[in-house]
Length: 275
Image 1 (cartoon, one colour):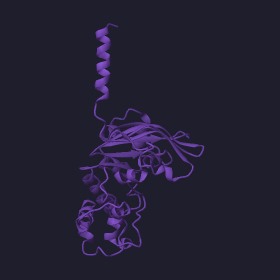
Image 2 (image 1 turned 90 degrees about the vertical axis):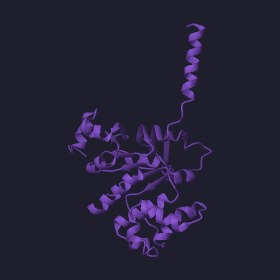
Image 3 (image 1 turned 180 degrees about the vertical axis):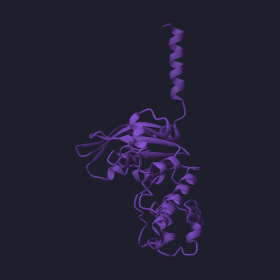
Image 4 (image 1 turned 60 degrees about the horizontal axis):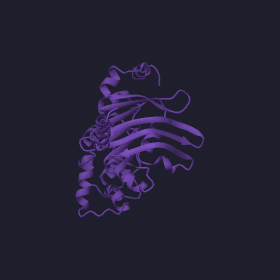
């Protein structure tokens, strides 16, 4: 190799090093354990800003474990361990100098079962995250209206903000939990089967909310409902287990994954042949 060619190689490497970091959330070679149980193996996925990604696959393949790794909730379990990297806008959320609580403000979570705080009214539920995080805001009323509106709930509750969260229907409670998550202005919202216990009407409203949220933030949703994944997601990732740790089979734009997947197991799953 000549001196000039060596210089060109070095310049190319410098250019690559200076490329802007991926904007969004990214998992790189992620593994998860519970004690000696290897639950998830070598998963790499990207979640771009302003998109919805659906995670599909049969029960027990590690989907819920995976999204808990994405905002450091996995570490709440004493026996839990992980390997790999989770990057938000190029920054490792598991770095030793990163505050886990701060991570969870930017990467919010909505669970399968709605969990509004029972001792708080609707307004207090929306503002609870702000108060717990000691975030100073000038106009609480505007925050409440904005978050409830984005969650598709404002028109239904604006005249009873002092009612308890528990007085709402299941679907309304789930949207209240979404509003609570939005109050701290996350850049990513993780949703673990948010519609599994809801009626079709409530499910449709949550799906509409997901699409609206994705105009500003990244949404990641675990779902066992193939029709829901097809309706709401831009990208889809199929997880599977063969009796060992869960792993990622393939990920692609949703239309491609459902109509022309690269793996026959994916085709069999989305067609309902197993799972």
